[in-house]
Length: 186
Image (cartoon, rainbow, N blue to C red; front, side):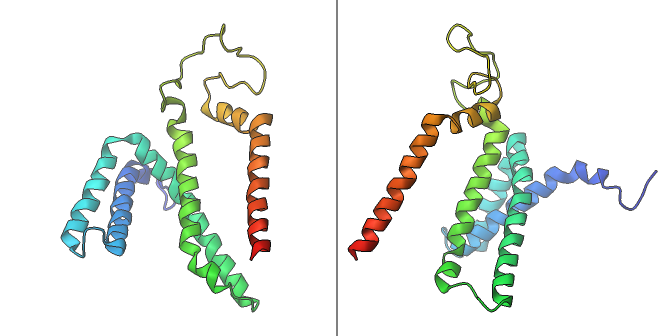
């Protein structure tokens, strides 16, 4: 039965929407940053080329499909944070507002890297594959195993290994030590 809220037909055109989004985003970046000058034809040709490259990779299309909702959530959250802070009479400092593009870029890179890891993580390197590991070299039992065929499980087991957590703690302590020594020295 057809209804007004039936959106199953949109699923067939989702790749076209991704290509249009990639074209619009790359054209906007090329126009704003102008690395090749202010020629709109060159920018449009390069943006179309970048968008057409996405046609050949379903993984790239899926990464964009998975990343765009997170970017939208990030932009809505930033909008609400600035709206709430200005509505209570405490506008954000100019230093935070001037560095907002850097924050958005860093969070965007994190979003893309996480989505790339989820999509192509297990097949990206020469030592990673969906094949089973040699059980003589790596025991494939227990939790915390990094020899499984699941990229997410391997990444989580590596990230939360006690040696890696200790290294992260040492790095955080070092960063704050250098910041504190530099602050006192001024």
